[in-house]
Amino acid sequence: MREIETIATRIETSAQEIFAMVRAAQRNGETVGLVPTMGALHKGHLSLVDRSVAECDKTVVSIFVNPTQFAPNEDLKSYPRALDRDVSLLQERGCWLVFAPAVEEVYRAGHDTTIDVGSVAKPWEGAARPTHFPGVATVVLKLFLMVPADRAYFGQKDYQQSLVVRQLVADLNVPIEIHVCPIVREPDGLAMSSRNAYLSAEERSQACLLWQSLKLAESLYIEGETDVATIKQAMVRLLGSIGDIRVDYIAFLGEGTVRPVETIAGPTIVAIAAHVGRTRLIDNHRIG
Image 1: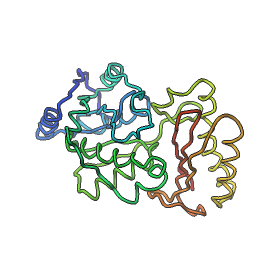
Image 2: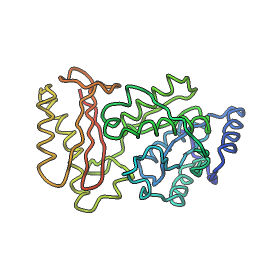
Image 3: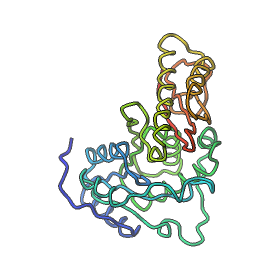
């Protein structure tokens, strides 16, 4: 692992300035990693930063709450923001630059272009949140153009999003390597998320049922059950056993795709989205 440098992390708000700084580093023979975030950093985000710092000469973390990926009824205004705390955490980890642009720096007046990556973005999260992936794809491409890094790091928790980003990069010939890193979990298995802060104490204790249901699917498969409908029924029973959990979907997908399978015959991603109280959470687990 590369030794972490003791440096003062710089906050940059200008797309023009950060582009010039990244290009200057690359001309100097240095590799640059980018970790796109919306801030309110937790250990999941920081694991991506650590991976980039270990693999790249310089690391940029973008902190931008992207308005185009929120529907009108979602939590754009209340989404957690903690820039000073985030920068302090990033400096401890040897982050070189924090790119924290204003909305007007990313979306100029009259902005009217949206990226549609096609079929990979349509089901599951795309069906539940129709405006989400066009907003994600648009801001990710804009970040790749403003911060022309060599590598970008994303988390496996947003499984479908990682496929959307890979599709975007492949289809548009974006010269950047995409690295998808493992989910980081709380001790009880709950996947780390900035939205976990919305949960009440009671809801927080119930939210770990999402991970328990994914582990139940794995256990049933290990015991010999391969019928998806049977496994899904067991998961729904568990999720309905206590608490205020409303399931959006449970999907069994061929690994690397959004195509559902009826029988587990190889590596399979079990993805779940559910509301715990008023908070919507997602998670996934690889079995098979």
